[in-house]
Length: 535
Image 1 (spheres, rainbow, N blue to C red):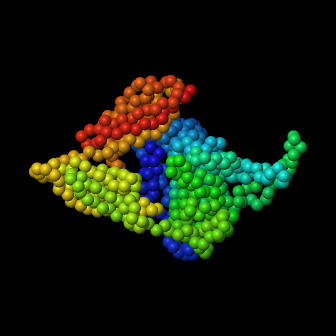
Image 2: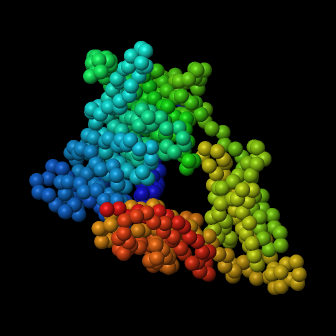
Image 3: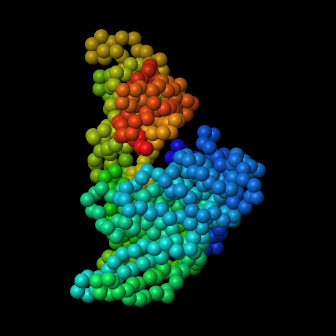
């Protein structure tokens, strides 16, 4: 649900248009904050989520069903969408998946602190839209420096916002004099065994305004009970964003204005996790003006930093120092490799091969669209040889094969081919049957996530999604088996099926098996997920 909500919002934003960026590094005549569009607070997100209207300044508390009946307090449940009226709001629970939409730029949030002493990404997604953040730097990241011979320093750095352990999305948001930190636990207690998860913070069409750190330091000595002296240092962050390892920051169509500090992002990035996710800083199509900085990004590894297609009111070169840390203002736009689809036939099969032309190697594990007579047949992934094989074909096919490309690696490509097959092609030919009369079964895929329920909760709803490529598989039976109990459900028009696991009351960790038996149009498929029941 989280991904679907975000996808709808991003499609809407693309439709209304973003700031236009070019290679010009000095011309700011066309820059305007009005290019940052706001989504109306009445715009519908999706029809099957709970919408709650909140107004902190209301005299009487309502049930939250409308602006007229707005509630004064927020009780967050997974998947809810909250509409906030004008006014100030404190921090929100960061353990649930939800979306917050501000009424306009006068909807202020004054606290956001997501810190964890764990190394996990808790698979929680939180989205903020149309909200203005004005968060004072009252929280600290703390670490020790020094050694036994020279003595120790106890260092406290004050920040405004912490983004740890979760995935955050900010759309059309404004940040006033607000600093960020992430990856604190990793920095204070390094864990290099590959078990640390990458978390992400994505900013789309956001504004970062009027940040300058307070250079005044507070320093004093503290005498311990064992007669040692520890020097204590306290100061505000010298950077708008301090990104320790295992956090990925992405910015698109953002504005950075009136920023005074060493750098905008101090990045320790250079890591990936066991899920193939990587950290670093990636800035695209953004504007930098009135910035008194040494560099935009202070990077420990250049390969984990991209600043592309941005506009500056200062000279921004692609050069960087030869010794880490690197102060980076601009990076080269990535050249995309040319791709080629080759299609051949053998017996009653078609073999599609996708190749990276630049290095003459197959492209593995990417999705290729398959169409016949203009209609979708399937979306399939290439195998370890970069191939997709369609078997047992009979009749005439007017195929189109299409690879959409990868914006960071590969150019798109497509090819059209017509084939005619007969049954038992190597023996006695039979009458050719038009391919439109033959149904090629499509591959279906179950999307399901791990879930935790409380044992005492009477209603334990668990939802999965069944799709063939991008098309929902609707009105089909699916089953979920957990323990010795099998639950049944039917997918709706969006491919969703919801099971009520009300008899799952015993505390423990379970492996649930979700199955779709297949039918005349779709192949069978199954998936295993973890379900936890706790007190």
